Image (cartoon, rainbow, N blue to C red; front, top):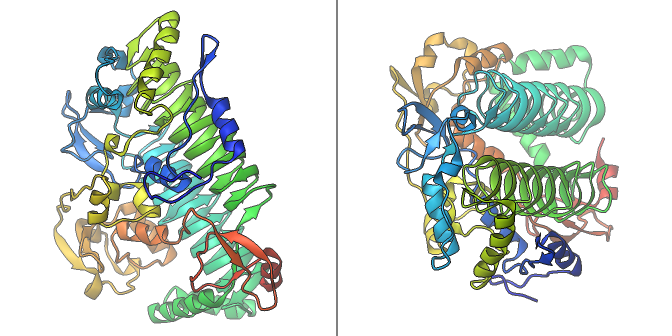
Length: 560
């Protein structure tokens, strides 16, 4: 078996993988130009792709030509040609103005990096949105703040991967929900606060792995239940008293939260969540067929090594795809067909090594380009010229065994600590630098405010209705990091309406706590922990973790 060039572990390349790589290899003038076999294991390939994805950190910077203030994932000192997304999409910007010829005497990626430095790149993507300035990669949304990777949302804040939802705050991977707070990996919920893996739940607090429940507080593993408190059924009148007390008595609320945590720690976990799917391996896979070793997947088929995918078909080694087919080694793209080695792009067909591009057909090694065909390094060619030149570039790249590899880590504009790679494959600063990754120590300026409130001493579980509007002019000092942060008016209104305490943690700290709820994108072989059961399975729960992990049969026998 081959040895991964990064982690030095052996890894398997099966025949089906090789057949796919052969199928995705491009054909020019009737000749196939084969993509080389992977040199990294699937985990290291995924880490490399995710090291190009900064979805969480946004900064203010100036547009070079206009001096206009932009909000983007590129910190202010980066010397890049960042323009507003509206201007980028206008006729004013044409990436072909930065086109250049290939130099066969200079390393390919060095030439690509020079193009990256000057080509126009959008500040962020907000398509058909209103009042969503501090949002990134969202569409069809209104009145949102610090919302990322989401669509069809209204009044959603501090959340990631939310779709078709309203009034969602501090949440991750939520669908078709409304008026929810600190929701994680949940769907079809209404008025649910502090919940993980909740589905079709209403008017409930502190849930874990519950489905179709209503009027429940501090409950684990319930199905089709009403009026439960700490997994015990109560009369509606008693539940109403508990609910009212939870919304008025901060000490009682904290006591219930602690009891809920104890219940959660002792409740057996499902080995994997693969729902309405066939011939799939991985975790959190829904409505899919023949998707292997993949994680957080929706409506996908005939693919392998995917993460956070929606409607992917016939793909291999793809991170965060939406509506993609016949793609290989692609990251954070929307609506791609027959593409290889691309990232941060949308609506591409038959493209290789493109980034921050849109609406391209048959392009190679382009940056910041839109509505074009037959371009190489952003330079326009005729069809005949393009079909003749690209094979020569591939052969040139193959002299250094480059064609078939995703972009090298030196091409990423982000420090490893700024990217999604740090969330799933965390490294210390020293380890990252020693392994050749970049690291970014930039700190955004503290907000200019009238007053600073210490969360540790002045905000212990204080409800929002106890504060006047002038708290919006104050900075709250995070009780864990000391970093100051401000509240938004919409956030304060939500907390008041739902009797939610004023947050005591910086939004980035709250986000990191949600990230830690994700299991690794990795599978381990384990046996069922239920006494007497001999079933075996692959799961994202590593051996040695404290949770009891049950096979599907034993798990179903233990839910209520």
